[in-house]
Image 1 (cartoon, rainbow, N blue to C red):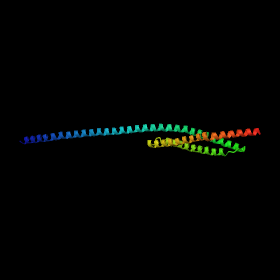
Image 2: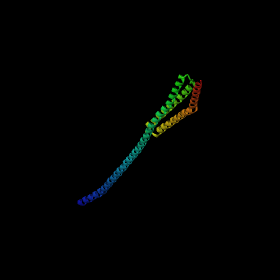
Image 3: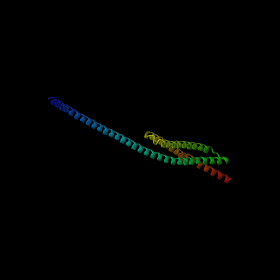
Image 4: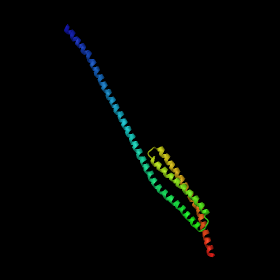
Length: 205
């Protein structure tokens, strides 16, 4: 009977331990599966972060490439307009210099130059205005080149300023052309006729 009791007790112990062990194994397996899923999710999140960083880097690289291209075009344009500025300023200054030379020659021959001197003052003022506005234009183009990679809004503002200063320089150049056409040429033509008349009168005498 004792043996029977011992056997029954042993069977009961085995029956009790068996399901508990199986439950523990199931819990362990579930935990492992959960850890695996979490690891996969973590990998996916990390991969998403990497992809996002790669896309951001690609966008940044494209923007940098674009702004560098814009900067190069602006700098090339700047070189051209600096040469044009020098040529234009030299051209206008030569006009003023020739007018001053003419006035001195006339004065040395006791010929009145009041109207010519007034015309020289007017055109000199216009030339000065052009120089100032064109130099502002050049400076604004330089500023646009410097801000090419500082953001679209700043670049757009700098380019708008350059356009406005260019419009002013064009207006000043047009004012010089109108002055030469409407005032200087008629005045010089009149001086030429007066000199011819004076020469004829002296010859006749």
